[in-house]
Amino acid sequence: MANTLEIIQDIFYEQEREIGYVDPKLASAKIVNAASFSGIDESFIARQIHKIPTKEYLYDGAYASLDELLKRGDDVSIWTDDYVTRVATSGVTSLRTNLPFDLRKRLGLASGIEKFSLLPQAINDACSSDYKSIVFVDNKEGNLSKASALYAGVNNPLKPDAYFMLVDRSKDAPENVVFPQMRTVIPSIVGSMEAYNEIQRENNQPNDGKVLWFVDFNEVLVDTPEFKQNLPGSVASVLEKYAS
Image (cartoon, rainbow, N blue to C red; front, side, top):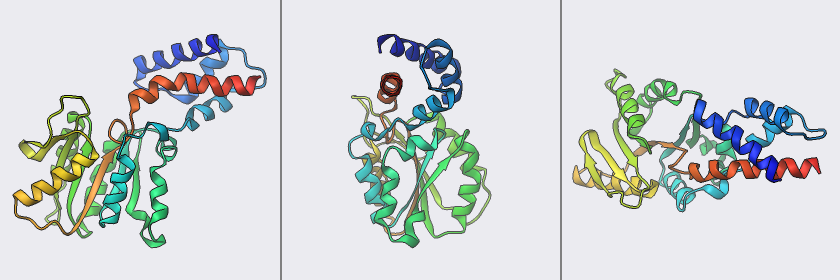
């Protein structure tokens, strides 16, 4: 196990340094070349990397927060450039089963290799719906700046108002500090909801009306750094099990 773990750690960390993420297909080819597993091929290893669940890495309150948004009538889109299986194994998509069948599309997935490529069409689609506003929640200010620029580039008089909320989970993160362009620093998705409600009250706007939330997956809903740290060990355990 120790040798297998060390091999996988080295391969995963190398990919993180070189391309910023672990590519299961490329990683599995390197694992097969570096380790000896009887009867285990690259495609099997790649599937196992994909299937390692993220559910135990959900932040406290993440699942309940999404549930509350859906219950109050808002629409939620999990916004990510990560693999769809990472979202599926987190358990949050099971919230759809709590909704009537005809309303399950209210919890969606905006996933792509480049997640910003999805936004212009999504914002245009929102213009033809009854949304009062769109809220973008992310843990990187640069991502929110990109989302803000794409939002500004949509020329439609029916465009809902937009709010951009930065999640900062560090111990000393300020709460509900409103920056220019309504960018709000908050410690969690729960804080996003509270900050949005506070903005509505400050602007004397009614808090009724449907909101479209784009909620980033990594480091907003899921503790991605901890997941990545434990991923080599999880994969090594699965491979050792099948190889024994």
